[in-house]
Image (cartoon, rainbow, N blue to C red; front, side, top):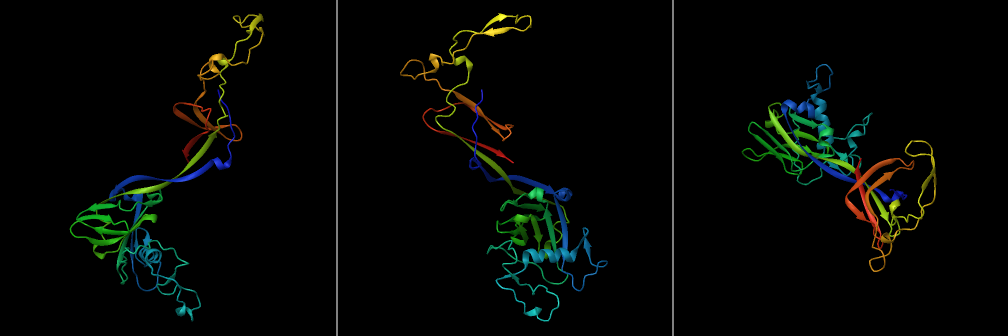
Length: 312
């Protein structure tokens, strides 16, 4: 049998939960999980038909985008002295106001070895968002290949530990972007490699608190607990033949002795148990059912709280 109680909005909360998954893929499958691009510091003006292109991307644009987003120096104020005679507003050198730009890595241990000489290159591996989720977990990265065993230090730096510890680039965890800045490793993502890491994916968990007071749901609706009183009897028709028939009599609504009283008085300490809890919407439509591992007795002395959690 079922009984109902209305919940309020304050009984429902949403709690974020970080789930982790281990990923590994090789160069042959990297295009499924990521994209690989090369960026080059190209001098002179941009020309659509002659600028170097790699993997359908202009190398100049890849270089400039990574440089501006992740490696530009940050200052508390913007130096606009160079803009005095400029008709169009352009960025002032490499200085960016802190209030206008997001700092992707403000760790004192972050090593910035971004190449700035003309014709120097970077290799960029951008992991798909549905793979890295909310972020790549620090201290979980391993890139292996010929003479390489690259790990991260948890601060956004990538080091090759194959023979000697060498800084090869950076990882921006929240964006899933690997940037190889060391000029001796610019063939890293061109050659055969295997990369593995753990990600974090935020799952929003709904928590529903169902408060049951000591006076709630403490009476069973099982009809066999009622006194029989006078029985219903067939006065006309035939039940066996399937024809219409008439019942007369009544049922006493008094609870039977074994289900009343306490251990110290007549009868027994009988209490109803619950085996599952259902959640309904305002239209009385069943949305979810929480089934208990074993029946739980409804306490007559203290309030009880059932907490139902489900993911969305």
